Structures are given as C-alpha cells and as structure tokens.
Image (cartoon, rainbow, N blue to C red; front, top):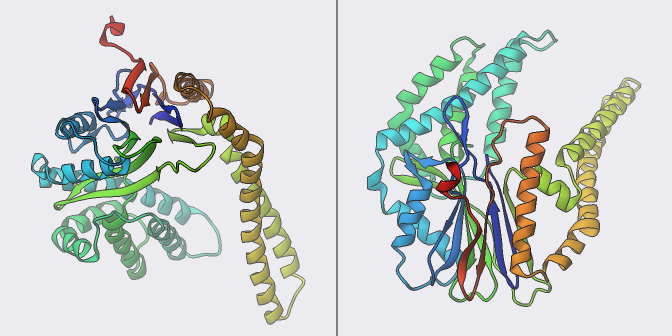
Length: 406
C-alpha cells in the first residue's frame, strides 16, 4: 500500500508520498520506490502512483515517463486532458503487452476471489443452524455477486465485448472454477450464480492488482490547480480496463479555494483532519443495528397477526436504514463544522512551502500509526515532498537519492 497527500490552494500544490513498495509472495518491502513522477516545464504537472507497481510486467513509472516524453513542449489545456492523454497513449501502445500474459493476470486475480469465496463457503457449511448447507452456500455466492454488481464498471466494458471475452475464455474460466469449487456444496442454482459472478468479474472486477494514478497541477488554461484520477486494471482481449477516479477542477469564484486529497492508506490522516475514525462510526452503526434487531425480535414474539407482523417488519427495516444514514450524516456534519471548515480557511492562505510541510507531516503520521499498531510496513521509508506552481512548475522540496543507500 501507499500513503500520499495532495494539498492545493490559490498559491499552488504540495504533494507528499512515502517510498515503500511491497513485492513478491513474501511481502518484502523496499524503501526506494518512485511514486511521484514529475513532468518537465513547460508542463506544470506531476503524476502520483499507488497500487500495482507494474502493468503486465512493465513498471508504471516507466510508462508514465515515456508518455510524458511524448507530449512535446505545448502544455495541454487542463489536468483532466492530461489524464485522457495518458489513457489514449497507453491504448495506442498495446503492442508492448502479450495477450496471454494479460489473460494470465486476469485469471490470477479471479482465482484470488474464488479462493476467498470458497473459504467462506466451507466455513458457513460447517456451522450448525436450521439452514441447509445448500442454502448457506448459495447465500455466500449471492452476497459476493451482489457486492460485485455494486462496483463501478470498466469504461470500455461494453456488453458485446464482455460476451465476446466470455465465449473465447469460458472453457479456461470454467476449468479454474471447477478446481476451486470441487469440494464445496454444489447445486444447479449455486453453479449458475458462480458463473454469473465470473462473467460480471470481466465487466467490473475488483482487481487487487490495479494501480491508481493521480494527475495534479495546472493545465494551460487553468489559473488554479486541479487534479484528476484514474484506476488502471490492465488490458484484456485488446481493451484497456480503466475506471475514472475522482477529480477536482478549481472554480476561480470559490472562496477560499482549497483542496485536500488523501490517497492510499489514510486512516490516521482522516482522523487528524476530520476527527472521524471510520471504524468507530461503523461500530456505532453495528451497535445501533443490533439493538434495533433485538427490539424487533422481542416485539415479533408478542404478535400473532401476520399482517401486523409484516407491517412491523417493514417499519423496522426502515428504522435500520434511517439509523445508519443518521449516524453517518451526524458524523460528517460534526467533521465538517468542527474540523474541515476551519481547516479550509487556514490552509487556503498558506504559502505553498508551508503546504509542503503540512503534507509531509500528515504522511509521516500515517506511517507512525502503522508502526505503533504493529501492522505490516507497507507505508514508510523516506517521504518525498514537492510543490507545483504556475510560474515555475514542479520542484522537489525533499527527495531520496540513491546515495542515501550507502
């Protein structure tokens, strides 16, 4: 994982990123990753990279640098156009990647999902309760399929393309499906649901090995800085699978203008900035749900009339949803009023050098949290810090050097 931060105001941009990269099955880490890739002036832009290190074997840092060298000396109109330019450039250089390697990477990630689903199926099937094993296993794959259906679709994954990939690769996918699910409870309905999940994975797979790229700085016609993100999952059967990420284009009329974009692991940063620990919010929502469910059951036992029972069930379902929404909204309202609004007012007036200090400190805070909770060291190493301004473009404030290794 990675921890990165983008801070923007009317004076410019500050970016900070850790330098740890985790590679291999042993999860070995290295402290020399280049996750901030600058573009040379007259381009006033940097690309922040997190997630998968390579795209089908080629490092993303190499691909971004190669794309940057193809831009020439005329800045593009907007940051969003830089994002679009990179995607188009990557699509036009598909010749660098092998179709079989691409499918191998896809099936590897699908099998990762199969493994998790299978383990959950085996676990629920062993539990003793009134449901039959078939019902419990079907519930597991149904939940995974529903969860996947809520994920964003890849930009290029048209229905006809998904169908063509499935026809071409169905035999191999079914072979791996049979391998992973040969020892779990099966039925015709369960098999149909597993196939549905597999087909949907082509369209909107939650790929673990995808990269996130954040383009940040100034386009030719932008007086205030902006950023635009994209998730790159890889090529599959000639199509580049991407999901457009969030973006922020400045409105010169917004006052005060300020943007803060945490990327990667952000728990400690979010807690500092918003006073909100999402884990605690989720605990509150679960606690409320348990109490409501307990009350539902106690009332349910007292009622005989089926019509009244159905009405009460409906009302309690509404109460569950309303309670979850209210907890989230109240938590966000408090964060907005107590933390974020004062933060914006303060940060909007900071010189860009001070923004850089804040960005560095917050990424270090995320690394400290990981250290003090004894988590695997996927955030850390030297913190690279840079600024981007409209007059001089990109400038390193702090950067590791190869000499620091010796």
